[in-house]
Amino acid sequence: MIPLAPPDIRSVPLAGTNLAEAAAGTGKTWTIAGLFLRIVLEQNVRVRNILVVTYTNAATQELRERIRKRLVHAAEVFRQFDAGDDHLLAHLLATSPDPALAVKRLRQAVVDF
Image 1: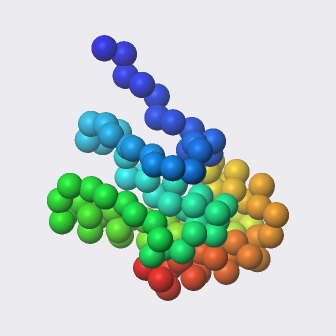
Image 2 (image 1 turned 45 degrees about the vertical axis):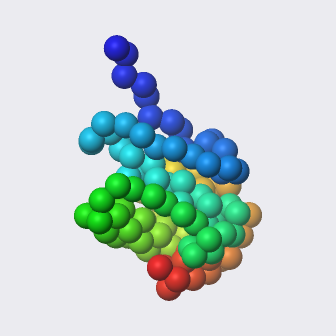
C-alpha cells in the first residue's frame, strides 16, 4: 500500500463536511487545526458554529488545546506580520485582504473558545 500525502490544507474546500481519518502520528490534529483556522479567517464563522468530532475525551481535550494554541499563535503572526516557516500562516497572511480584521477575528475566536 502506498501512503497518501497529507492534503494541502491551503486549498481544501471549506464548504460541507471534511473528514480527517488516518493512522496515529500522521498529522490529523495539525490538519484539523489548520482547517479550523481557515474557517475562522476566511469565512468568519464563530467558534460555537464549528463542529469537530473525535473519539475519546482525552483526544477531545488535546484537540481543543491544540486548536486554541493555533488560534493564539495565528493572532500573533498576523499582529507581527511574520509567519516564520509556517507555510499555512504565511499563505493566509499573504492572501489576507485585511490583517487587522484577521487579528480581530482570531482574538474573538480565542475568547469564544
